[in-house]
Amino acid sequence: MFALVHVGLGMPTLLANVGSTAVATGFSFVMNARLTFGVNDRLLERALQFASVSCCGLAISSLLLWFFAGALNAPAVWVKVGIAPVVFAAQFTLNSLVTFAPGGVRGR
Image (cartoon, rainbow, N blue to C red; front, side, top):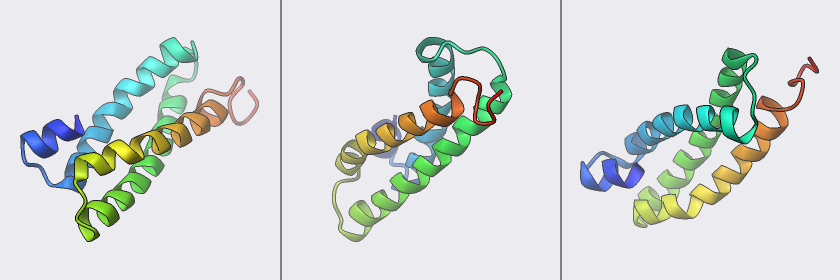
């Protein structure tokens, strides 16, 4: 999605990152809740936690994109490809420990 809107439509790097992350967050929450973790309780609370984790990932990826693609003039798509696994792993770990933890963070 990032490459499509950044390269295909000429959208600026950071705006493309925000847009593609927003779309991916919605899709990813539904797939993780239903398929990966099999939960169907407290969906609004879980969605807000998931979105918060996603915002952290967005901040990290935007900072790295700004630094490598902006300041160092590296190709933005390749920077995104390189940082995506790191952000994915961090977000998945945090979501599995917080958002989709059995009983939730508060131990319900």
